[in-house]
Image (tube, rainbow, N blue to C red; front, side, top):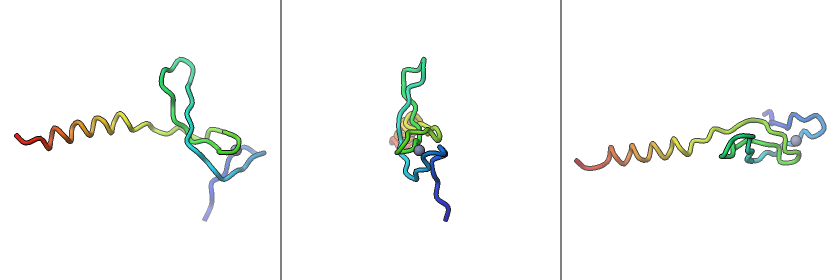
Amino acid sequence: MAYPKCPHPKCEARFFEVGEVLPDGRQDPVQVLQCSRCGAVLGVLENLAPVQRELAILRSLLEKPQ
Ligand SMILES: [Zn+2]
């Protein structure tokens, strides 16, 4: 099995964590997957919290007795 590793040539760590980045001009932070050792950002994580809130509202409306 292949294991992911940090793409930074001087790091190559195999441990990652979820971090937050606040890009210029934004009010809300963006969640990213980053290397636990050097902090290199490997990708952006989709924020599903607003979608999950909407789904919960829709679900409660559908389950409401008529
Ligand atoms: Zn790294």
